[in-house]
Image (cartoon, rainbow, N blue to C red):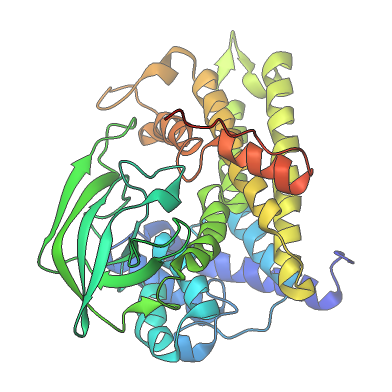
Length: 396
């Protein structure tokens, strides 16, 4: 595939740069979820086609035809400028593409636009205390009672559950079926009677995820995605999108650029760290990994046109991307010397503690979303055709 820029793509690159320059003030003021300026920035990005670019207009997107190079140009220019590419989260990055693939027309109309525009926040109800890496062992149940499902059980590690309006949730609807069967995929409101959310504090010191308990939660029958008992297929589709989002190569490029700036300003004995042989060597190794991750991202982007299976490429994003981010943030902490140990309300904290927070956060993500060991097993078995890991028979 020819990845060189045509005159049309060069013009588009200038168009993106002009946009970033003319909207610099709005971009700098843009906040995150639930902020007026954050929602306004998201609306501006959608209107210009810089996010939700290929999502049809009838579902709230920009409606452009897929163009790999234009997608890459947008990502590169936003990363270089250090500008927020818009809202993310589990609804936008995971549920929206899944509904576009397998949702009903009614579901697409009801959920995609408000999710894209930040008006509807989602959390993911997957992991349970006894079903983490072995997700198919989940036991949260849903029993059909007339025109409603009655949900009982518990989910854990539920990111943003304390903020979410809705949850997409895996439940067991056929308890006698084999564990990968009999699972269904439900959508329901988080303010439904019978839902209790309890915060869990992670290594960053913040409660980014939660335990969620369901007691006789009633969900309308039609709020099921896919067929009853076939939710595992929907779950696998959404897990592919999750792996893409856990270590976004474009956000990684932004952090790498920030790392370069940090190493230009920090010094040892009057010498800039970026000019120090040992630190520069570490930086260049990370740069090579950033480049590799971004080329793998092009493989995933091009698959939308070639229709090739990129499940393994997505596993690589999760495996390599989270480890890369952890190492990248680690170099940032080392670059600050003893100030890299500052945390919380320390008066010498740099960059609002972002290096320390991301360092701990991505240490957790090496485990979360499917552990690195699990990812390596899948890649070796399905990608390299190596023998499967032997299963030890349980003693009676």
